[in-house]
Amino acid sequence: MINKEDFCLAITSIKEQVSKDKTNSTLLQEVFSINEEFIYDNSLLIKQIINLLSIWFDKEDLEHYCFDLNFGKQSIDGDFETVEQFYDRLTKNIK
Image 1 (tube, rainbow, N blue to C red):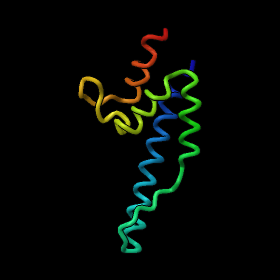
Image 2: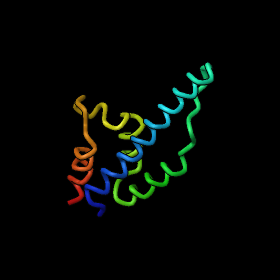
Image 3: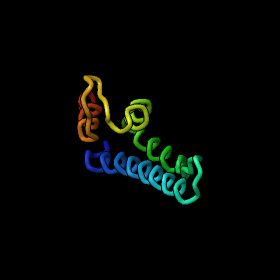
């Protein structure tokens, strides 16, 4: 089983990369005065991190938390769910 610290680092790294890509896209839009988004394609690395984490957890749950819930902006009860809380929820039934 992956430990909580490594799990959180992996999810946080994905979140930070997505955020950095969006920031860089905005800066490029401003520099070149255009409306197109210039998002770097980091999908191969992100998919592989998700695939590695899916050794222990459901891939759909991981993708849902990261991309549908925007890294915990919502949870089942409508509150913000931290990555630590997400790990606890995923491991609750495994232990």
